[in-house]
Length: 346
Image (cartoon, rainbow, N blue to C red; front, side, top):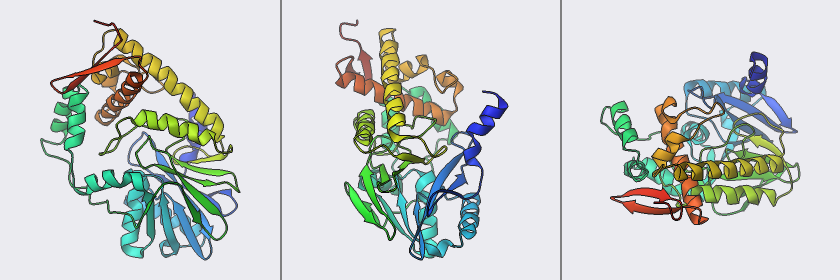
């Protein structure tokens, strides 16, 4: 990608306030790494205040940019009546928690996020370590221990429980529109999208992103088959009318049906590649991840930073487990480590 194309691709991260529909404004907020670059928060004008879809990460820079953007619209933090949060990852949830402490805004979150939020509040890390062991990734456990100096990460003090758990499919009436919260598990167990059918808008969070594929099942309380749930959730979105995408990361305006189809096709191709890695001799999720290419540049696993190595192994495991449910691979556990094979493979 040449410099001009790269600049155009990432123009969406530029700070400011961008009207994407009457009464709906996109506000990109910064993230502290070069991966996702920014997160889109959507401000909906409603009565004499605002409803925000997602909130950003609880960082001083993000808070300052959000305050400035709301000011351009003639509002302040005290005018934010409610945060509708697509999922509990910190770049979507934690600034809402910080602002609620000072201004009392209500926070709504999908009910499927409750086990993970409660695990974060209790600072329970054992499940994450146990998963890495099960995936054959002891090397990553050693690296993580070295990165944290042998200590567990500090308590997630930026988390609190929401004011409301959104149970199932829920209509959310606002003054000028009605949103429909629809559970779309996969990226996380409790991810929801918010549909404005009358305006043909889908606030898609991380479920459907225009340029990248979201991570699968990165959460303390991981589902048994997160990729299976994700694929089902993509098909569910195809059962609704085609809508204009308002994603959490990336530019707005794509077709929800077109992008859902592309993501389904991507994962079918990735499933084929993962099955081939097992047929070629990989046994565990870690070994399969080592043999696969990562990112658009087809990088090796060990060329990624440590955080993304962990994500990649979890992603590989998610694909392997779907392959088992489809009967393409088999799995067995020895001393707590899961190994995969093609039927009839020695």
